Image (cartoon, rainbow, N blue to C red; front, side, top):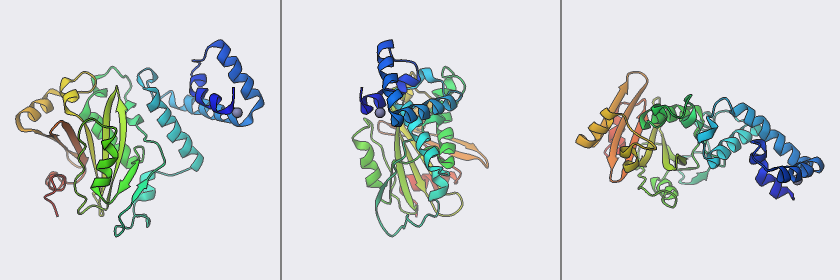
Length: 274
Ligand SMILES: [Zn+2]
């Protein structure tokens, strides 16, 4: 076994999922390779930290690996919140259009932070949206792409997502960012708009409308479903905490969360704002 073969097996080894023979070969390599041994130790340590947060049985391995990778890199660089470090950052000069690909993986563990995966809350798009909004503010969901041009962010999603992801024109916002995640085989697009001033983040969660209406892997509370069927819109407000605006857009269900006023959100999202 060489280093790259060992590297491929680290997650499995940490989870005790290797067969006896493979495990012996794996251990034989670790006994003579310090580099792989420290990778293995690091992952073991991270796993012990994560265990308390994640109901592991339901997590697709790619999500688990992304979360582990993001945490590992974050620990290495001792970074403070991604978001805090970008607010007001001079590299985001609004005069210059550019695309910045953030190297950190998407932290999607907010999707899994409720105690049991069997709780309907876990499939509930509304509670996911609100949690994700909080995660964006806390820096736990990190855009993989950022741009001053909505088209750049839209294009980022095109190759991987079956539904149309729409990104509002960025007039009046400093930049927008996008990230992609998957839960129970369903894809989710996360879009973040950053504004200057106080109520300065608008988060939009987009997913397949049909999946949401079917309610098997992800779902909606009855009141939201009814409102969407009748009017195409659903609103929720927690004064002082957040405004939630949900709407249908062709085959896509969009859920926007922000502390900005509802009218302002709608004006921005429909491109009728400033
Ligand atoms: Zn090695």
